Image (cartoon, rainbow, N blue to C red; front, side, top):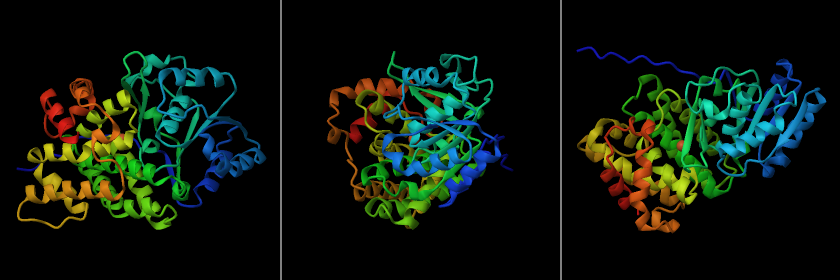
Length: 385
Ligand SMILES: [Fe+2]
């Protein structure tokens, strides 16, 4: 029987500059877009590295406003405050320079600074009516893939849940990936964000809605990150390793819109919202255990993942696939990340509540190759404990 490939629609950034000259190209691009005033959303520690960019933009006649209010995972309140502060300032471009939180906020700012829709109205999928402000994203960590995804995540202070805003209007006009911007990222953050990116690729490839178009990026992303994350962690200025991981992270971003993540991310969310564990680390803590849980439902897919991770082919798919789980555990260990929930002082009696919260992330759970019941979620957290 002939297999029919399911329909897919793929939004990607309109243009991507990758490499050490990306920032200069971006400055030229801002000029040719005729932007009069840009809002740069970033974090204070990046000030030094951004001074040249800001000077050059101003010399070229573009006004620059700077916002550094986002120093942790953003809430609806953070976002509303930022919008109120800049809504009437004549901003015609937003440039996000930072990690996933900063980029998510920049993406939403580009939509909301000139919009008649309230923030609450756009929560969910495809509810944004348009975007009138240009959007440029510059990732400075190799991880979230936010620069290449149509998603933005905000924390709802009412129920402490992460809410997703998903729209093609959140896709940047321009993405500049300069891997050297990641060279000063500390080892622990390089490791955690790198594992987040690897998880994006892995969960897309093993996804119930996997697609051959995205498989190509997903598998290549797993290979690039698995082979280069350790040197990038151990020697931050290893330009080759940084570039390979940055590319893998970008590929992980490509996976997010058309296919997206699954059980690992769903179960990781409560660690972030309840215990403020960083997103990448939350995923790393659960990744091997969700992989082991999923293998019986998709052995051939997990075999491919194991091979991409650098494992040898074994006598059957399940064996090869489980070698992949061991490989991931080793990678997490050599990257010196904590490996157990108890290492982060998460109490064992919080597991039932975390499992209940994870069950609410249905938009991701539906993607998982094996159904996760609340009992399964409890078992997986116990395995990870
Ligand atoms: Fe992620």
